[in-house]
Length: 450
Ligand SMILES: Cc1ncc(COP(=O)(O)O)c(C=O)c1O
Image 1 (cartoon, rainbow, N blue to C red):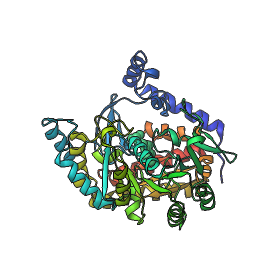
Image 2: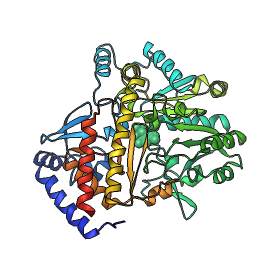
Image 3: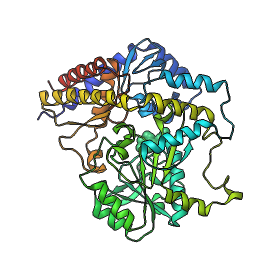
Image 4: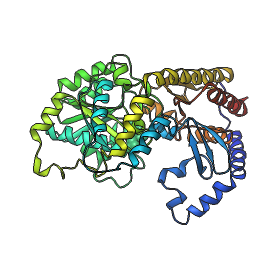
């Protein structure tokens, strides 16, 4: 297998950086202007991490594509890191938004749409009770609070190299088997090892050991890891996790924010999982901020028993704009008309096509990489072995190489999800979009090792 020649990689990267900058004078000028009012010249701190010298500034997006201010057209496989998995500005969602915007945006009172969405989520995920938040982070945070509240236990458990949004308790990782604040953790309120246990994904004996003392309120888990590359569960992992959580009185919180790519009811419905809590955010409202968390009837009873009317607005579960009329109108339209079973029936074959294209190039040049897929999400990883846990997936990451692959793609009109090599298909993504990626991927690998 050919090793990556680092000198060659460096010189190719320099060539691509120059091309990126030369072809984007308007983005460059906006970035320079932004540097005078925005920290680092970007509206969100991590936007400095895009592979180019600056991020392309966007002029407009529609369906599976967007244009930057310099007029370049991109196939968008990042899709707002799942926030726009519906495709950009789907017409059914726009129509609902346009109508609702004229009828009130936020009231702190329910609308009929809330009931419709609750009923729709019941059907999709099989959980009877639902609440809303504005972000998946908040939906996770509120579920964790409820889990601690009703179990009287102080800790949670997460899997190594997980990502569940900016949930304080989750910024922990194992170093030499010891749980510590994750590298880069900004100003943690307390040492996360006080609040959180962490074990490797797919490691049932470690999970059993961690849950045995009976001090963990809930396990917070993606059903397959998606944020460190895709790590699939081993056969039997979910059944064993459910058994050990039940045996130890630990609640199970499944975060479907990304794994909704598996189908209309996420991985939970596709694989018949049986969680106590479930979180679904990002694309639920077609890109309008919104998220939902659901739970079983038993959990609902336990919450109701501890509900305190006088203090229920200051208990740490809130958000003035959560459950607002606009988000709920957008959710109703998105769930009933955009993220439908028929849409997944188109999206998943596109991801299969993308995977097959990447696989062909990996085989052609015999690079020590592999490609994997979960529903309409696919990803290549820089290891020949499929990882079984977060550490193996993390060890396969190659920052330099990844940046080159992303920049090369961007210069040829393709946007991948940043910080790993993931592509997501929207209902609007077509074969031409996928084949464009296949060609560009083949060219990039050829330049690297051919
Ligand atoms: C699995 C998962 N859960 C939750 C979140 C948080 O979503 P948000 O940033 O919209 O709050 C993310 C974000 O990437 C995620 O990947």
